Amino acid sequence: MKKEKVWKIIVFLLLLFWLGFLYAQKIDLATADLGRHIKNGEWVVENNFNLLEKKSPLRENYYSYTNPDFPVINHHWGSGVVFYYIWKYAGFSGLSLLYIFLSLAAFLAFFWVACRESSFTWAALLAFALAPLMAERTEIRPEVFSVLFAAIFLLLLWRYSRGEIKWKWLLLLAPIQIVWVNFHVYFFLGFFLAGTFLFSEIVQIIFQKLTDEEFEKKLKKTKIMLVVLMLVLLASLINPFGLEGLLYPLKIFKNYGYTIVENKSVSFVENYGVANPNFALIKAVLALMVLSFVLLFIFNRKKISFFYLIFSLLFGILGWMAIRNFTLLGFFALPVLAYNFQAVFGQKKGEISIAKENGIAVLYIIVAVVGLWCNFEYVSFHSKRIGTGLLPRVTQAAEFFRKENIRGPVFNNYDIGGYLIFYLPKSEKVFVDNRPEAYPDCFFSEVYKPMQENADVFENVDREYNFNAVVFYSHDITPWGVNFLKIIQENPDWAKVHSDDYSVIYLKKNGENQPLIEKYPAVAGPRQGGGQIQDTKY
Figure 1 (spheres, rainbow, N blue to C red):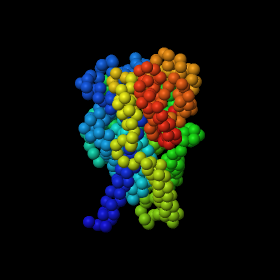
Figure 2: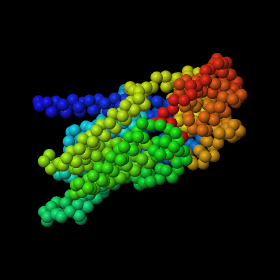
Figure 3: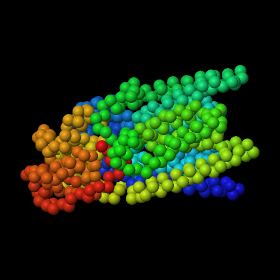
Figure 4: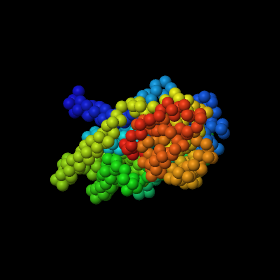
């Protein structure tokens, strides 16, 4: 085996290990949505996949006692089934390993396209620099399936557009889309990708000078791509909600009364005072993408790829406008940058000018420095969470709740809702959970926030629901959350009986709770601070 091949294998394995290392983050179940996803899957399995049942977590706010009949569309129920089975047979460590495996599988597809568009060197260097963006979303969520399916779509469409596979392979996209539409709300990327490649073919027919034979081939390919796009659109209708499910991505933010970090722009979050090393990286990546197209326009404009241009515009905007899209931007930036820089600097050696040689050297240095700095910052930022399974002691509050047989109604904050859904008995419901779309707008603006800002409002709401316990995430950094922890601590009608690194439990002073309150007369106060951006919602 040649030394060059051995070197490539070593670099590739190190790159996989590095990405796997970044993806391996212990689960903070106290703020994650994962507990609710597992319970969704459990309900589907226990009810024999009866997806048309009206009284179900697929169609109503099933886990809440405040808004139990509020209609919802559970667009990720299929992911919950997968998570439930993995958790049942392999635990939370199994879920961590599943996330790592699916993420690396998606990376392989993007990396392969990047290598084919440029060279192994370019692809590896860029992948190293982009790794923190690719691994930004380490919480186990249904969106990992969107990343994987987007990678498969890109790979098949790219290979067909290059004439490497026959059109029959594209028939796989429709059944993949059926799975996708039931696994995550980003299923619309399926017909976006198919439509982008179709548009690229049409552009080539219109603007390129083609021979009659080339025109016929392009026209045939365009017709096939159009059929594939229609099949993907029709496949999206195969979900428990039909047309309503297909159109749901257009409506999800129409009833979204609670603002969360992952849906806000980089500039908004920076102004709010939250730090993340990936903020610097995304700015560098967006600048490199713009630079690559400018250089391509100057030196080799005939090589400009329309679908890569569209990808850059869409995912660049999505990445800047919402932190939750960092991962998608990181993945799609890999083949885009690889193609563009190869098209600019990849001419034959005898044709490369001294200026371009110097440009290549400088660009390599820039990418390497950005990659080193951002990867170091990223590891420093997440070093305490590296591993698989749950974070240490994150289950203490739930274990205490069960051990002492505490009963509701429970008042809880937004962050810890999914945690309680997972651990509370089925007879108990939550006040709120991590789904803004599952509650009326007015619930957050007129009830949830005011009752944490004003002690009198809390007393009024308490009289309505007769709370017996309060379970609160102690690192809630929202102004109303911080204020409520002071209100409840100073309220003489409530006693703290449990506190750990993640949450605090208060019980109302009544005859039923008095023995337990006397059992824990002097519980230490919660440790303050330490909230992290991917866990903090506001």
